[in-house]
Image: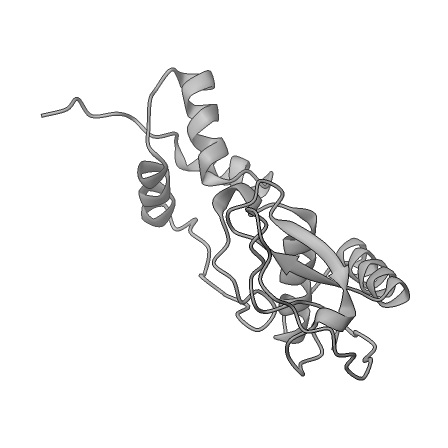
Length: 167
């Protein structure tokens, strides 16, 4: 049987979570600060045990893709999460609201939407909004891109332009 490893205390995990660290980053921090080799699942289990796990709120309309963990903190997905939170009754502080409004205005002015490729190192791309593939008021392309060589065929028909809003 493998020796038991120790996960960080509840206070340490809470501090790291509040600082915005991912579970993978917490694994690295545990190794660096405490000399303990833990797995991401051990961190996740400790978070659940201590009542620190996220509520599991998903914004499937705003983020329809399965997101690679290496892309989980990218700016476009952070903004899409804020959009989802605001549209589902969650609260945003002034800084978050200002960031989201500026981002949506920039997308609108430049006629851009967000596209995603799970397998690409970059993950998120801003593409022309003529490639939108849904009728929702969300600045995304629902179908994933495939940037590993050839791209999936994208419709070039121009759809009626909508102004993206928070509510």
